[in-house]
Image (cartoon, rainbow, N blue to C red):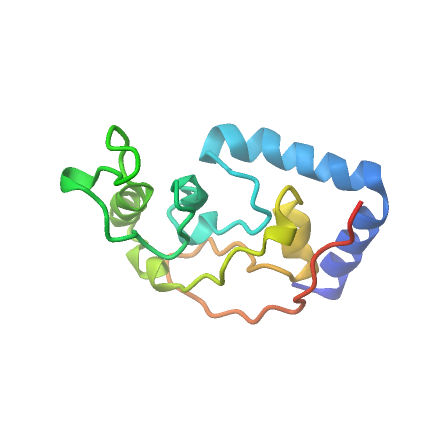
Length: 147
């Protein structure tokens, strides 16, 4: 991101009320619309706007290999595999190339933090609304300050 976005994230993270407000605002939007699981490391723009953390195994880089016939989940046979859904949506949106992106393992220290602030701070990948995959280097590796 930019120095300005980093400054905004840093300012919001210094004040508990601003930080909590960012988390609440994000959850108000993302939970009902995208099925967000509040991991703090959002990859919706790479995965056809479907949260891969809805996978019972929380796999972020494609199906586990146990997907049943017709795209049903190995763990919950009455549900579709989330990666089957992501693939189907990606086909419809012309964004299958985005599925080649390897996502780093989930950093549990970021759970229940604002992915928006983490993005502004450069801790996670920025949203990428284009159809083509872009490579981006992360700026920071540290988690947000604990409150």
